[in-house]
Image (cartoon, rainbow, N blue to C red; front, side, top):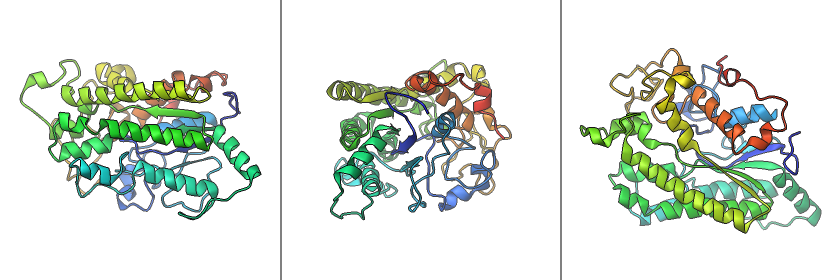
Length: 365
């Protein structure tokens, strides 16, 4: 087993990741063959051509792939469990509504709902039931959580995206950043109080590089684009703003809870590097287009998702950063996992005799 003052045996995930969300297998969209034909060869609820970041981390730890809780309510989570739901927000819908974000496609599964589900499962009681457990069982639960790695995020992207889709300005969306950060922070504190001690908290991606953003907010003003990457500047600046605020809060939490290990995962810089030096990572020279044969500059159309009827996928997803214009490819996830294991999760690497070659990490079987 791997050591970090204790054995890290389990992976517990409570998040919605923009680039790689897990959903219930029962979702009809996830039964599109293109979503699972490259690696798993069966529906898994993953919006990608294969493995996600957490899948690579699980492989490295020698753990099975983490399944979504939704649709698997009766399974054991001894080896880990994922409460992520595609489309979920950090902030509760009622609070978003107070800020004028009222899109009818906002899910009711906020981060708080995911946390409540986790707590109910943890204590083995139905929702709303009074929690009564012996001190022995409580101590055992705390040890279990103390030996677990908690990935909290990436979360908050949907809160912002829903606002942008409604036509809100960046300045207006900035007003909900404190709500998102406070929600993430309070979730970490609650998990800490339950016994969790090791956290990995990712920041936002460079949204201005995603085919969906580039398509929706396309402009004729060349000054709106980064001359080196072709990404939109202002959406990326907003991502940087969110990440700065998140890091400040995580630093505050770390000082307040010295017994915890709270790591920030810099998704932004890792993914941005794919666009600065794409060929260094095996991607095509101009990597802004999605792995869909839709046409246009970015191979993206909101009403024609990748793999749907009449929309073919690219022949080699490993050459692409973006899978469907919103979520990343397995190849991108593999490189991101390597970055995490060499950075904020380096304590895992130090306990292994050798880190697997990235070509092994991102190979498609």
